[in-house]
Each structure stands twice: as C-alpha cells, then as structure tokens.
Length: 331
View 1 (cartoon, rainbow, N blue to C red):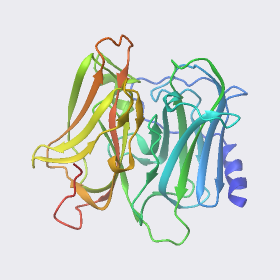
View 2 (cartoon, helix red, strand yellow):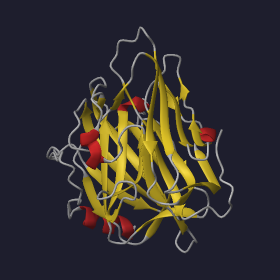
View 3 (cartoon, rainbow, N blue to C red):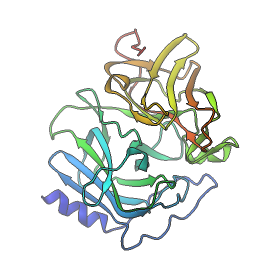
C-alpha cells in the first residue's frame, strides 16, 4: 500500500521530537541493532510495533523509555477514533499485561492543553491495555506532516525474557467521514506533566507513588485550564488499585468513578467496559470550579513487596460547554 511506503520513507528521516526541558533532560540509550520500532498503515489502522527486545531493561529519560523514542511524520490529515495496545513474544505468544508499563504517543506539532510547553500526549496505554473506542462521530485530528513520537516502557522487574514485543494500533476514521475534533487532557493524582517531575513527592518515582500497607488513599487538587465537554475518559492504574475518581468540589458532583477488576491478591486484571466512561452527551468541566482526583489502593499487610501506584485519566473533550446544561456522570 502506498501509505506504508510513504511512512517507511518518513520514518527513515529520524527526526527528533521537540520536548520541553523540565530540568531533568536525559539521553535515551542508543538504538541497538535488535531494538527496532516500525510504523505501518493498513486500511483504517496505523500500528507502531516495538522490538524485539530482551527484558528486563531499565527506564531512561523523563518519560521512562525502555527503548529510544521513535519519531515519524504523517502522510495526510487523519482522525484518531480508537486504539489498543498489546505485549507479546516475537513468535506471537501473549505475555502477562504486567510486562507493559506504558506506551505513549505524542504530537510534537501541537502543544498540550493540560501541560503547557509540552507536546500533546494524545493516546497511550499501560498495563490495563483497555481498548479505546470514542463515541461515534468524535476523534482527535492528526495533521499532515506532523511529527509524532512513540515510546514504550516495560517493567524492569519482570523475569528475564527474550524477544519481547509491544504494539499500539490506532483506528483511523474513513476518509470523508464527518468527525468532530476533541482536545486531549491528562489528569492524575500522581504528577502527569514531565516538566513538573521536579515537584514529585519523596515517595513518587516514574513508576508512580509508593503504595503504603493497608488501605492507601491519595488525593490531589485539580484546576482545568479549559472549558470542555468530556466524551471519553481512558483510565490508567497499577496492581493493588481499588478506585480512581474525579470530583467537582464546587458543585458536589462525582464525574468519574472507576473501579478495576482485580485478582484476590490485588493484581490488576482489567477495567471492564462499563467502567470506562464513553458518552456522546458528555459531562462538563470548566476553569472556574475546584476539582479533586482520588485514588485508593489496598496492599495486604503481609505483602513486603515495594509497589507503586498511579491513578490517571486521559480525557477526550470538545471545547466549550456541553450541548445540554445537565452534565452526565458515572456512579
């Protein structure tokens, strides 16, 4: 397909992303002959494939990459309408989701709304590997010639495993279809803007916040820098997570309440579909009200492992108020 050829040519340019320097700039290790990243486009999908790579490996740079960041250009305008991540061996054998820490996709030609001075983080996934499908008729515009950066981080405490791969597949809207563009806004109890990593708490690392024994409740205040109508919210969490919530303190409303499916020992299994917010009507956020993000973990008292947790949402919203005065919420 001609787009594959175009992408292959653009990938070979090796352009570097322009990232804000938050005072913690580190070089990502030089790409070895074995750690490759490939971008392919077929039908209505664009897939970024990482690897193979032998694990465990460490994390490098502000975005905790296990491999060098990979930058490529888009051959035409397109709208992202969904995505899905996978982690597996080179022979196709699936691996436990706990192997994947995160995959991030950034648009270096568009500034983040939630993290000023940083490129727009428009899609990604962690160990939850939840499939994202936006409400019909909504998407994120990716412009022709924009330089996109993709990076992957694997957990560095996994057992020695050879030929590990990960992929991130983006669903693209058919040409000519009407799509209303959405902005992307990231929020979290842990610090989500890499230019603010210097303000992390003493017990917070690139793996998250240290989970304390027993029931561990963490909250963080939040102010939005735009008025928006949220149509989709992608949750992210780690093992031992019990709850993530976003609440409007000013109006006394719970906007998002996300409970994961976990194993008896607290190991994360999935965010079930009914726990992932998706609603064309949406709920409103604004720059005036006060909000709070909360995450709750439970770590067994006899569990001596050092574990770190996160509670994040990647919110997809149209600018301005919702068409209806009534905001939707999940309970």
